[in-house]
Length: 137
Image (spheres, rainbow, N blue to C red):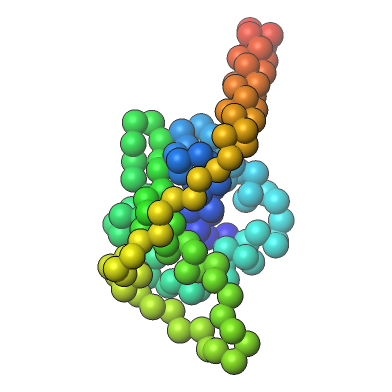
């Protein structure tokens, strides 16, 4: 499994691309134990951008207890996920070429109700963890 690709995939799934470390660790653990399919998929995606370094290249920022994907990170992830035409050979451009492209892709907006459901789910999980800690002591 490629950790950096996994981090990009997780962050892009959160509203505004930001996840606190606790949520990020939980999601990475889930994906890391989800089986060979995920490991194979991240390996294939990482092969498209072999010099990937999410922090050094400014694809992910560390912000107040969490990580946030940047517009450049979204662009690189979209490039990795793009399917080449059947007759094309895959030629991996360097990350610098991708990041310096003239028109970065703006973050996709998610429907408000989806963001609300995600927020409510995180709150329920947080409350459940607190109850479990209280019952354990």
